[in-house]
Length: 165
Image 1 (cartoon, rainbow, N blue to C red):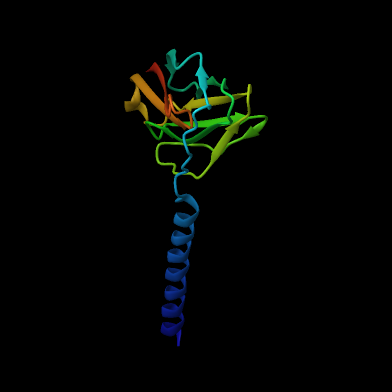
Image 2: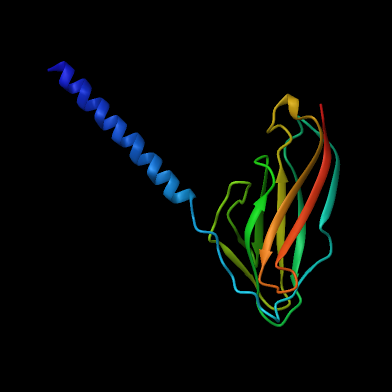
């Protein structure tokens, strides 16, 4: 009798673990957003690079916010935001609304829409302790953002620094 209970318990536990894994994969795996390029969507970015200088390993996360402007006559759409390393994530704020966090392995159907004459803020956050003590030294991280601007369908932001003990 006890053996049957153990086997049934094991089967139920296995099914719960498998079901949980399928659920997590279905929630985190989305189709990437697709936006149509627009002749009159125009993106303007004043700055695409940033140097943090020395970043203390134990000093906590560092961040940089870039401004993305819509200078066209059509709505500007931002999507498929990716970072070059799991130690870095990015987030967009448009009209007070905050996007999810985007990282290296993020696939999202999220599309941010910047109205005519408005701006979006792209905040990039780097965790200097993510790679552990062996992660000290020079770093360069990239963040890409796809747009519906026919002249600039992909923006790339470059951030660098030196992680120090």
